[in-house]
Length: 225
Image (cartoon, rainbow, N blue to C red; front, side, top):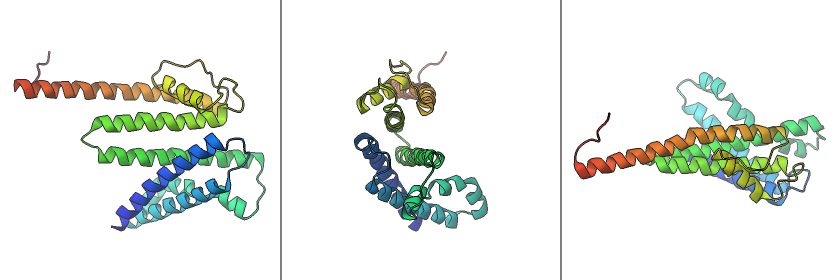
């Protein structure tokens, strides 16, 4: 029961982090530093992640091996920025960039936890897993693209432009918005790869659904050549 409770808490924390990150990027992007409420939300999320991590270690058959293989979760679960703010530590530009990268990776981990829960709860419904993966992945990619591209890319006027760019690249069609930052260029490469990997899944789903309908109507298995 404790393991199940912490897993549910980790899911709630992941959703909270994605929502907080969305509000921080879309509505408070003009600020140079994180807002206080986002820092508090990050601390809460990190504490839940740490709790979930140690509960998983306690239930693992080989705790040491589990710790070594999943140490990155603990590293991303430490609220470095909040600690620096609490201790009144003035961060250099390099450290600020590193901590920004940690926030990005933590958001990716939150996306993974949310998708994993959705897929595990819909194991018999491939379509739900497909839709959840495509929608959440494109949304988080749009958030990151908007955060890094909007200040330096005149083609990204608002979050809608970033969301359009994400969807167009995910469908491998492409958009007339060209990234100029490193993060934007990386996302521009990863999104079409994700799209090429995901759309055949939808095709397989529709084909299997059609074959199942033919079997139900005809009573025989579909012919194969």
